[in-house]
Image (cartoon, rainbow, N blue to C red; front, top):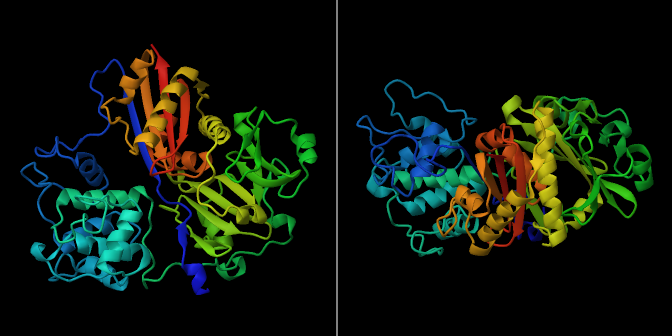
Length: 503
């Protein structure tokens, strides 16, 4: 690959934050960002939420006296253990009899060429070394200042006194609460660990034949079909086969999605540009692709096509892919870029598919789309439809759209964008339930999902469905849903789902 291509690296899936909230009234105790572990020294600590997350995910434990000791300094092996426990897919050998407990963690760090000291003294470990380890886990070893800048640029840290290299305070020791918060940030952004040799994943997938799968027997077999529609079909043929869509939505690519939501059990989006099909998306059992279909195992995709793309090069820019915990994967075919979305809560089966014509994908040279009222409306409607398609697929009744609570959701997304924060509680201290009450909503059950940074309604929805708390809200027995989307702020796009059942 030429040097000029590597000069500007933009991730294709960054800055993804998801946060769920729910409560069932008439309970007056509404906890949505607090420590639930029961430690006697974390209830009012700034790191309470991260600590709860760390304990619930078996990344860190408390002490026998009922304390967590959030401000206690962390040694290098302790931090390595926390980081690697966050990635259970990493193969850790058991410590040999007579060897130190932390040897397996150092073995992994060494195999991945992370810049570790091999020193257990807490006085020798600091925030600067943490930055180097985290950066090495994502892009290889960098200088300390470059590593700190990487954390700041990726939103993994806002610094200690300022969002600058100096304000990061590299020489300060790392506390237990800070360690868990760093790791939670990395996981929330769905970063994966780079391979054992410390090099980035290869830019091109291995051809299907080399992976042990059978090659497609014909061009048609290697083309995604949704409701009998292929990439390249004429728009009039789509209307002839499927009828008029319920509406036409703007996409992030600039083409129009024909939305077929008349039957949520066969939901589909057909992308049209200049009279031709350039995009396909389905969450239902109405598509097929080279023997794969809704409900196929992820292993079947990997057997047939190998590992997904590591990047897509567009002109002089390489867009690196980040597949989080493996909840989706993108492949280049003869006519399209095809993305398989997996349901991690149903044994990694394929739950939806998106295909974008190659010329269309290549023309999208910015990470985020141009903001517009039309696009905001499209995203809001699609998020509602996608929620209902998922519910119907899993045996739940569809939500009813509610304009009033959609207004509540819109105001919260706009407030997060305008005031540059990401939280259920506003900077003025208003909870979601306060906002609903202010807007005159009387409910006996309510919930909220928020997300930020996803480039489309599709990726926001798929992320929520693979996150336990958000999925629980989406599949709950609450009756009504309103959605609000806003552009702006550090995360560029903010999404809010507000759910409620009337009193």
